[in-house]
Length: 368
Ligand SMILES: *Cc1c(COP(=O)(O)O)cnc(C)c1O
Image 1: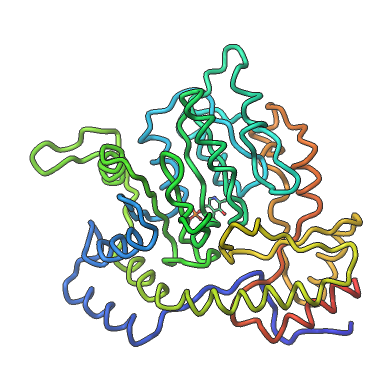
Image 2: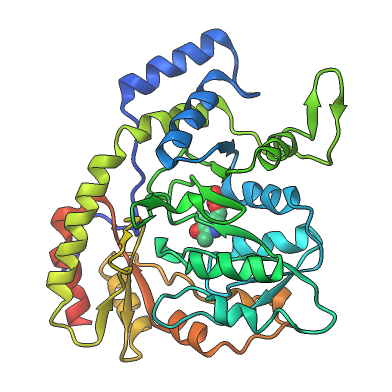
């Protein structure tokens, strides 16, 4: 083998807090003994993120999946929800937990997202009352948010966006958080901004913001009234929050590094005809979450295996499709674009510290 790395290279490497800052916060928590229940660090993190994303309500959660469940619950949905088969399992797996049934629809081959046109075909099917759609801004590439707004007006649909990959995504200068009824972010360490585990819901509706907060905390309204909704425990704790506050200090530098690495990959992979780097439209600010490539000659798996043999662990995000999971297989699952995409896409290692490794990784891909 030509390019053995001494250490394994994974698809991402999470940002780590500055030790001194983390320690100061940590000591403070140990002294105050407030580990959870809407402590000051969770409140501080929510404040900062609300300002950053320019939304009215930002509510922090223990993880993104629980946040997504509570988003769906907060809208009191029943019946069917149209969503994408090309995503992480969390997106569609939460639906049965809420008694909801997914209707998968095909994605657009170029954007990798579901589109208003594709979704609309499912809205008039007899006996299926579709009340909501759950699109994903996959790899941080925004969905047609204006088209979905228009569709939701016409059919009276709720929109819940899974923005797990899209923390830094802006469209024409506006944060992706602005769109839809509710937007979910994941702060898992595989995501660029993280809180060790964590997630967040944002919205611009006061009543909904209030319901989301109550549902996050057992449905409790206040000490006197008690629980008024069938809420669960979705709270972020203080240790997660201080991780997030420390990681926030580092993300601007990380964006810059990833921007350079992205350019480097483009340059180095440019002359391989069967490899195309996926990048969002130019009206969009990249989330710098992932680095997906398309392998167009049917050799995606071969490249994946060869990289692995060289200790480079790329990921086949997202294969298999959610519509092929055993628990969803009785629904429709013939989606030609999604199927093709899931067999072409490979996510390459992408994180600030890897700048010196890009060249060797690209050489391995050339050799595969
Ligand atoms: C990471 C991810 C989630 C789930 O987030 P967790 O915080 O790990 O629960 C949901 N949807 C997508 C598309 C994701 O990539």
